[in-house]
Length: 481
Ligand code: BYC
Image 1 (cartoon, rainbow, N blue to C red):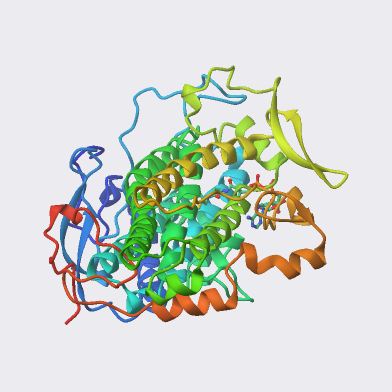
Image 2 (cartoon, helix red, strand yellow):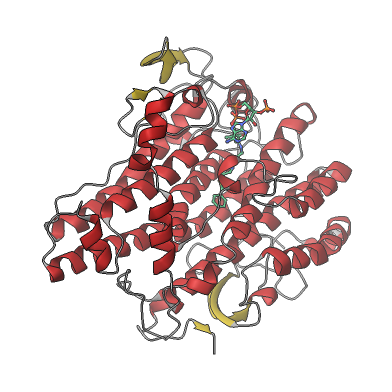
C-alpha cells in the first residue's frame, strides 16, 4: 500500500507508509503515542478538549481531496503519518551528489546533520501549540477558535511526521530524540524549545495572527528547502506538510487583514482621520494601526532570527551534502552546486551596514531569508490595500533586517525600524516607539473578551468573507455550550 488515496485509516495511526507491515516502527510509535496524548492533554489547547470542533483531517495525499471536515473532539483527532506520493526515479537536485538517485535510507556520513535538521523542525511544532494554548479562552468568534484548533492539531500532526522519521530511520537515538520532543517546553528556563521565537509568548490574538503570518511562513520556507532534500522520506514528508501549512498562513494573513479592516471601518464611522491619534482610535474599541505596526515589527524580527547567521557553514554543509536545498531549487538557473559564485549579503562592518558579496554556499541562509521577505511583502501589500480603500493615511512596512535581532551580525547592535543604528541608551529610550510597550500590551489584552455566540465577532475584528468549508456565517464551528 502506498501513495494517493491509500491511507490506512482503520488502525490507531492513520498512515500511507504501510505501518501495518512495519512492525518495529509501528510498535515504537505505539509506545510513543500515550506520551504524546499526555503531552497534548497537559500542553494542548486549554479548556476545550471535550468540545466538538469542526476540523479537517487529512485522509489522503491526493491534492484534490486530501481532507475531510467533521466534528471531532481534539484528543480523538486522527494524527496520521502521510507522505506525498513518491516521484519515480527521483534524483538529488543539488550539491555534491547532484544527479544521483535520491536516498531511501539515511546516508551514513550525513546521519548527524540530518538528524539535527529533523529534530529542529520537529521541535518547533509542539512549541507553537504550547505557545497558543490559552487563546481559546479569549477567542473573538467560534470561527477563529476553530481555526486556532485546526492549526494546533495540524502542528501536532507535523510533530508526528518528524517523529516517524526519527523512529524509522534513526534507531535508538531517534527514539530518544522523539521522547525529548515531548519533554521540552516553550519558555521553560530549564528545558526550553530549541529556537528563540518558539520560547516567546503568544499572549493575544493579534500576536497569534502575526505568528501564523510571519513565523508559519518561516515554516513554509524551511519546509520548502527540506522538501528538496536528497533524503527522499524527508522530502515527501515536507511536501505533504506544506499542503496543510498554506491554511495556517491564510489564517494569519486574513486575521491581520480583518483587524485592519475593522479599525479603518470604525475610524471612518467615527470620523477619525488621524491614524496616529491613538487615544481616540482606542476609544472606539479597536486596535490602532501604529500598535499593529509594532506587533508586526516584533514578530517579523523574531522570525528573521530563525534563518540563522548571515554566514553559515552549517547551511553550506547541508546544501553541499544534498540535505537542504533552496526555495524552489529546480526553478533557479545556475549549476545547483554553488562551488563558485557569490551572493550579496547585508553585513555589519565597522559599525556600518554594508552589502557584501560572499561565497554563494556561505550565504544560503540569507538567500532563503531574502525569499522569505519577498513572500512576506505580498500579504503586507494586501493589508495596505485595505487601509487605502478606507482612505486612511497609513502604510504598514516591514522593518529593516537589522532591527531587533538576537542572532547573526546585527545582534551586536541596536537599530531602529528603518535600520539606523542607535547607541544603547538611545535605543532604551526609544524602544517603545518600535516595539509593543507594556501599555500597548495591556490595551490589547483588555480587548480580548471571548465571543462564543455563533455568527458573532468581537468588536475589534471584521467577520471573514467566507466560512470554512463554505459554511454559512452563523455556523457553530465549536460546540462550546
Ligand atoms: N536560535 O550556522 P548557523 C516551523 C545556532 S518554523 C537558536 O547560522 P544554521 C513552524 C545554530 O543551531 C521552521 N540557535 O545556523 C512555524 C548553530 O549552532 P551549532 C523550523 C540558533 O544551522 C510555526 C549556531 O547558532 N525549521 O516549522 O545555518 C509553527 C550557528 O548558526 C538559531 C527549521 O528551522 C536560533 N534562531 O541555521 C510551527 C529547519 N539560529 O550547530 C512550526 C531546520 C542559529 O553551532 N533548521 N542558531 O551548535 C535549520 O535549517 C537551521 O538549523 C537553522 C539555523 C535555520 C535553525
